[in-house]
Image 1 (tube, rainbow, N blue to C red):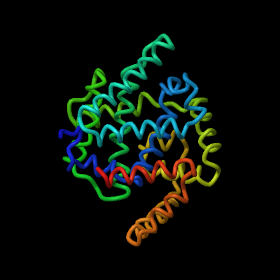
Image 2 (tube, rainbow, N blue to C red; image 1 turned 90 degrees about the vertical axis):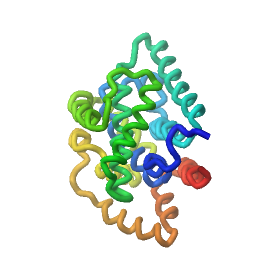
Image 3 (tube, rainbow, N blue to C red; image 1 turned 180 degrees about the vertical axis):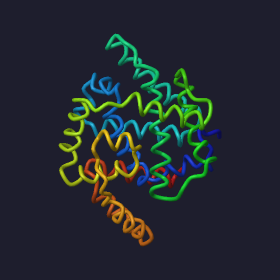
Length: 256
């Protein structure tokens, strides 16, 4: 059976643990809020109504593609493309290609930074492999202007961060929704997780601060993984509605 991503790929290791996915989710929540095209996410009303669910669905789709047999993964990508095309028809305009590229780029970047935070530094080869997987997703979506290699991606990623991020009223509204849906304690944990994985430009525009009090918590967390207490601590930081979903991500990885 041919898979979309090789079974021994570093990308499967990155996306195979709920811990890493949570940090990718946190970083995506930050950068999405600053993207100049965030109004597209507001158009249907789904993002402000359920910001955690909307962002979690993006991460879940990515993970589904990574662990699926190739034909199933391609169908999932086509479904995503179709959903976006439907939104474009409803609004009567087209989502710019740079906005699609931004999503791919942030998933590549956050895959690397989250894994390195929780596990170990990645080699250049492993980072390039991560880029290649998401580039193939972009090719299937028929996106234009994709970088040809990892080095070119790094350059484009830097330029995108300089050109396509802005703190707007929608940014402020989205963060108020995060706080509303998470509660004050989990909201602060979210911002700390973001501080540890997002690029410097995102940190600065969101005023995430410099005090990284989550670092010693992560040291304890890593130690707890050795004595099987990590799930307990992880679940203590999650809204009840998402505990089953996060637990299921680990279960799917074990079965894959």
